[in-house]
Image 1 (spheres, rainbow, N blue to C red):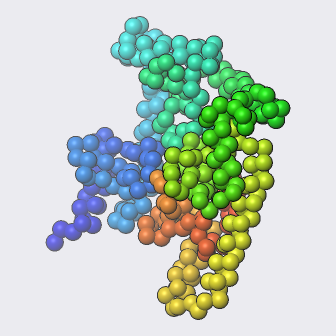
Image 2: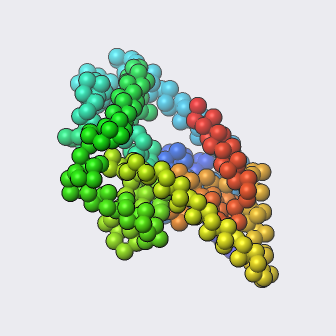
Length: 348
């Protein structure tokens, strides 16, 4: 009898025989649950590398696909340097026009960076552009583009220095009390409302959601009022008061005290066999993550929602871990530092 496993293995055979009939989404996935390969003429036919019914020769297949892609890139690069290359390289061709337009945009960014949005620190996906023209959202630039100029590194350094100088200037003006009317108590209406919200947060922090550790984007607010989601506060706002650092320290201390109290109450209460088994399973998963991080998806930087797990086992999607879990081990910060260092080394 033809089973689901037989169908999956047959699809793998078709991929090996005719890879051009499949979309290779391995480097384009924005969600770990998305398939790695999808049939072009039937999107319902998909394959996962970490699936259960994966053939033993899948590593050889992936190596062949990577080699084929590398050779295609080299061929395109060589054609791009040949004036008598393909049709797209002829003078006035569409590819030549796109390259000229991109080069003009890079020059425009270098000449007038204020006319562009700098989205490098706001991107939530690698597919999103790094720079977008303010008056024309269709004009966008990506740092990993082949058409990026050789001087792009120098340009980024200049932009970073300019941003740092502006931040220092705003901080100095705010400290002096005369640079930003919105940050003064007697300033404009929005400044007064924001200051009132900061005062309300300090007076009654229990009436606000603390989203600092749950944010998935820098644009999301750090604090939101529970009974009115329109009342929101950002720590990097110009109107943040000078005592915000002391407030954050108080909030962190109160949160730590609540966690310790809950842990003490949980430790004093008799644990059921089901709860003990759940704790043991979570502890085993944390040990598995520390011993074999390659066997887990690290979703910390691409969580769909704040409630999504931070780590998920590749061969068993039901096994998941949350950094904010009460069962997180004491050495979790050391583990996260090691994982971050490993990712940084791979990036270079």
